[in-house]
Amino acid sequence: MSSSSRPEPETVPINCRDFEALARARMERSAYDYYAGGAEDERTLAANEAGFAQLALRPRMLAGTEQVDTSVDLLGHTLALPVALAPTAFNKLGHPDGEIAAARAAGAAGTFMCCSTIASTPLEDIAAAATGPLFFQLYVYRDRAVTTDLVRRAEAAGYRALVLTVDTPRLGRRERDARNAFTLPPDVGIRNLERYGTTDALRWANTSSFTAYVHNLLDGSLTWESVDWLRSITRLPILIKGILTAEDAELCIQHGAAGIVVSNHGGRQLDGAIATIDALPEIAAQVAGRVPLLLDGGIRRGTDVFKALALGAKAVLIGRPYLWALAAAGQDGVSQVLSMLRAELELTMALAGCKRVDEISRSFVVRR
Image (cartoon, rainbow, N blue to C red):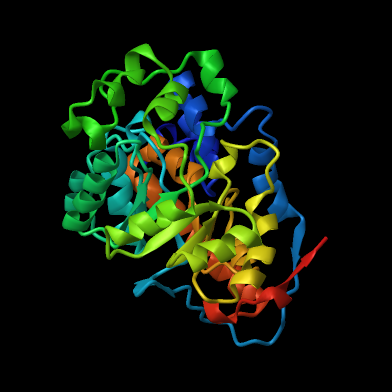
């Protein structure tokens, strides 16, 4: 390769954060802001990342960590690393291959993808292309027949679990989208809902806002009995996503949840809500290993993954890091992000003194 054909050093990503600048340069401003933005003053968005910086590691020496194993068992699946892809809407805003590229990258890395109800690719098409396990994130619609049919479709397509999002009785005030008057481009839509023939399900793309869509179509009256109803219509394990308190974690278990996702929706719902890494310890203490805990929000480094595992998570989910990588380089980009996080986690484990994921404990973390 001649010197003139070599990429400039600053364009070659060497960690997850490097993909964001590449994505920003390639994406329409309003689409970038849709991915990047949080609610109101974005304090919770910032706190998700800042919370990890407030934790220091307490490494142990002479632990024989020349070789480390990052694999983990989750709900009967052996994952090569405790990092998976969070449910994120409209992956095709970043890349034409959208959710299919992300699912293939997750499978190639030996982990799973959680596909969004608000995907820009039908759930069946994602499943047909996937090479690893898939979970399906579910919103409950006012029309329960639509919700039931989504569950049946996920079951028929081979999804392994449902992830019920419970933190969206209304949509948080996402001011970047309001300033941009954000709407979907003509070639991106809510493909999982097209078959139901409901004009309202898709109309926001051209004539309304996503806030109006959520208000009009999603069921804002959900209670814990809604979890019981969902359990009654499926045999798939149900994880509940959007939990930030020990009290609600206990209710999840009482209502039959197979797992809990500690999440504040990436800082996109209640601005000022607790950071997920700060919420995790009290939830882990309450749950005491009865069901697995997952965490999303603010994961940018392998050290962040390690800290989350030390405080009680079984695995973590990444959202924006994989979206930036998808926008920058498609499937290869998502593969690179997962590889980077695995390599960083391996290094953190080796330097901290853990040969296996199950050796990571609270004793390795202290608040600064």
